[in-house]
Image (cartoon, rainbow, N blue to C red; front, side):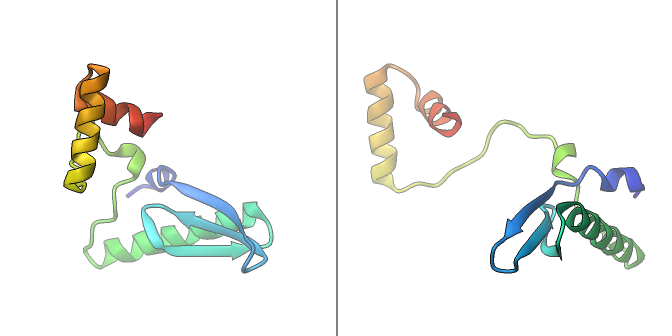
Length: 110
């Protein structure tokens, strides 16, 4: 795995009131984090931790996770909801003269 592909992971830096510092996270590695006084230092820290983790995974014959930005999405997924919610949504869609799929999509994106 090249250093460049490590740049494709999803990183986030936010203030942690509990710690009184910035915490950096990597979505693809939810158990990893890095605390620092400055956001730039937190980002550099988590990137170093992810780099080390990926190197360890490769050394142990494991496959590092694919970056979310590089995954392909079909636009379809299944959701389980209680039957009464399903019924209410079906009624709402019928009243609006649209499909249940269109209603659900509008609710998720709106």
